[in-house]
Image 1 (tube, helix red, strand yellow):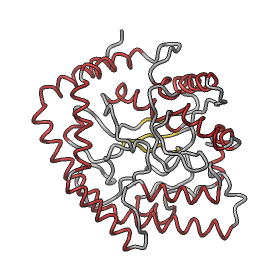
Image 2 (cartoon, helix red, strand yellow):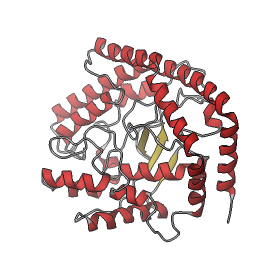
Image 3 (cartoon, one colour):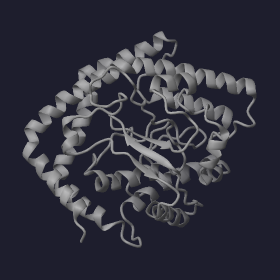
Length: 360
């Protein structure tokens, strides 16, 4: 199961690479994921749905057979291509006057139903539990993660950023990602959502700056297909926005917010906010890279963990109806979209399959 959303300095780089490569491995992906990409949108849970997933996870919709969403990917420290991608970022950052250490975390990445993506540490010590049980024991897995696990995955760039002044951090993040992310008053990335511009160092690396093999011939072929079907893929992206703006989903989001308020957690209006709040609270005690568990006051750490678990349990319970509603809206809108665009969708699927299979 998915456990913890990563938020190291390299997380957006992981996201950018995966969004580029996913079409090679799974057929295609949305060309323009929602601004919540890589956000802490709550994990899909175990409820009484009939969406075809055995854990209440990412709902399968009619479009999946043509476009493909929810394709997971794993990166490890021996992934030569991703290391090359990180090295491209490091060279770009050096040219901008910043130190950046190539870092390849072991992560799983999965697109969620609303278009966001989780980036999750692999090989951790958390048991594989249904989402409600996991929330009851570990909250979101932020302040509850054992320090030893976090040490193995610590991004060296976090220490570099921590030594900077506020102005330097702002300039660093703008060079790395562009000016599209919200920063807090200390210059750190705020919340959990991240994106990047084409002119940022992450964006330039993802755009295919020259590499040893020019970023895989298969990806270039797949990109040509995506370019040819840009209008179709844009409409698919618009469909996701339509799903989230559907009055049924908006009402479900309002009900989710009211449910959390009734449980004593007021003020949340967007699905990624509870996890972001838990992470922000953890940073206040554990530091910006969440590495201070060993030195934290035991009483305050216990209170932090209790608060995280309490919020995560309420969030998980309140999300059940939202998920059911979203699945119904997803099915309705995608069935209509497939009917209206069947010929073009089939052509896209055929072209992408040929591009991926081609061994030229």
